[in-house]
Length: 340
Image (tube, rainbow, N blue to C red; front, top):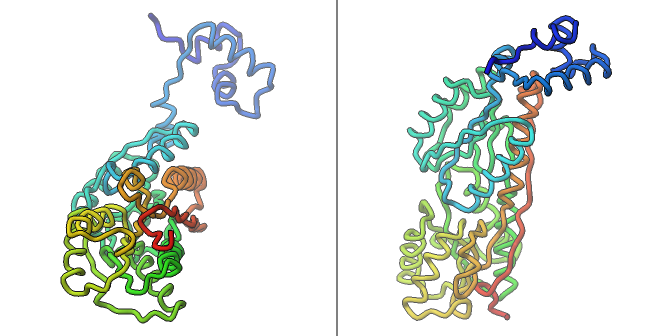
């Protein structure tokens, strides 16, 4: 079947091909009557636009790249859903890549996305990303870049959509204190990442506001895997049997701690109360159900994608830095209710 062109439509209608092109592009220079004639004839003849040629003329691929640590994490899979919904509604395709928490992999992915001429990049950095020369190069090139959830500390003037990690941690620890907890440990992540710095700061401030002394021995650091949670809980119990609560910077570490504590006969929350962070689906199904903080992954994905697309459309994006912060919601379940 012969492909129908703009020139063929113009010939049938007896008008210039440039007028047909403008009508199909919804140009204000063409009257509504002419637009309708062109659209009807294009549909009748089975016209299909050459999207590749159109994108090349506009110097766009209509594709954005997304780089995140692990798709398997509930927060990130939820964020992807939000990103894809927004991108689809705006006519953009999405390329998704996982860094698997490795800086070298992240660098290679970012470079490949740039080489393949994506129109912009959404990124949540890996646990190994302490500084970001690979991302600074992207910004300096003029390619729109938006961080979501995790951002680089050395790029404070970059666009980002994040959770108020300080407020979330403060609420979590305040909740534990309201439930008569005094010796509260904190499982934190790599301090190169702002999210874990801020969660530690929120933990510290909640103790301070309630006249509870900060004990550095009660703060343990890891990559917050489930096995890390179990290892840190074991270390705590061996060194300080008076621990009555743990606030973990993610749900996986909290669940690992819970499994270990139950294995040595501890009652949760009577002996040790627990609060996590991220609201993984498993947190509600565990016994006892885990108190946690919801990070609103879908909303963060949707908002960050909308921000990126705004920057793609706005040539002056680099002059208008936007930082959007959402407050996480404390979801109270059985694991923290000593008073319940």
